[in-house]
Image 1: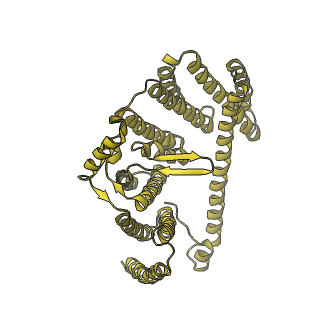
Image 2 (image 1 turned 135 degrees about the vertical axis):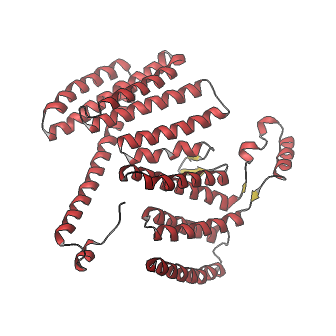
Image 3 (image 1 turned 90 degrees about the vertical axis):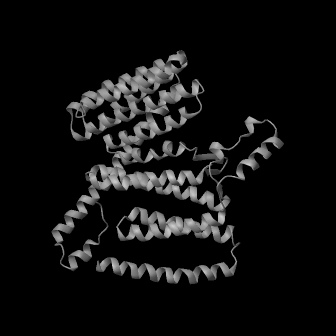
Length: 389
């Protein structure tokens, strides 16, 4: 487990010596610099590949330039110094991205009926072949090809579903499958950013997502209660499994649990503002079934009369209690990321309710302020008990 420690204080207390503190500093710096370098490199390769494909807009030109970049990059990658291999990596991977991306787009253009199955199978095959020799020519190239192939595989499936206008359970199953594939890709490549992305299709199983309008970014959750339960189940599963994994795999589990906690809190924010009639978006009547607003409104009211409804007030209280419990538990168990997220959403919750529900009335400030003091005292006493245990 990664922990935050004041090495100067540890040295002053004679718990570690200055040489050990220096080694800790060096390794921490090396880990951060490697993260920054690899993130910039992979981001640059992705942007350059896609940008060149769409800028040229000609499959033959994309294929020729992609093949040229691979031909230039591979010899440099295999035989030259570390500095030259760095640029050989970039050249070979941009070329591979152009070939795979350009080929996929051309296939969709000339043979749309067969593009979905071909891209799906080709992506899976390339990923599998690439994993046989993960040490050739180096780990970075193997990981990049794995991620490109994974994107091709999922893109092919998504195109197949969209082209055939599949509905019902098919899109939900695809979202679950895409989430599982992203977890595997992130774990195999040891890139936690990819693992974190798995929360997007996982949330979309219940249509939770985001939208954009001019200068407006929106988060929407048609089923906030069920989405919170979904994210809670994922967090509990991860927290149960992580202690049984090695540290390398556990890091991926922790980042996914953190993302689930963030999405759950965003769903709770939706519920605290508008409440929730549980299951309305999934099982309730829809306007498309009636085509008449009067009939639809009557059917909706009849359905909601027997459904479970949580008001915004109930949501606000339950959310506040959950945040307080998470803050205490995460602090006691040294889960710093979850603790920071709980404090952040606690602030968002307080700000939202203060201005949205209480219109910034002085009485609300007074009650909130006086209420925070015994809460802080209770957490302080609880922490003392933990330390004595």
